[in-house]
Image (cartoon, rainbow, N blue to C red; front, side, top):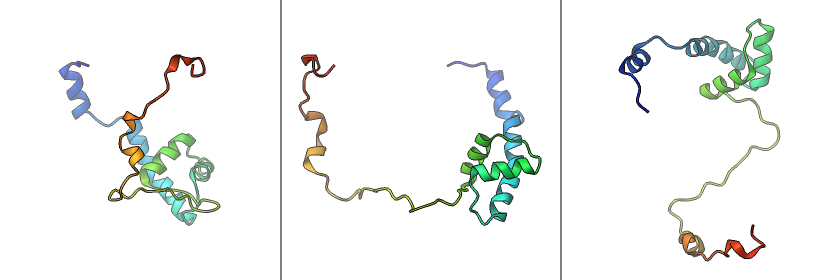
Length: 112
């Protein structure tokens, strides 16, 4: 998509956006509240604490900034574990060439 050179340089050399400035202002109180509560507060609790302190902010903003800062709340129950495949392990032969697997025709009436 072509844009005017003046638009590019205004964005590249211009001042930061209002959202960026506001985000930088909010990161300190979010980190402070999260740390003062032993790192167990999630986005909802941090959002409620910010509103109690008189800092009006949307919950989705708190969620986004906490993700940027790498902050998470305590998780109830077991920790979630995902399977991570070993890149050095051999793959089953059936999955090696999945594009050559014969598929049923779509015009049979039962696959519409």
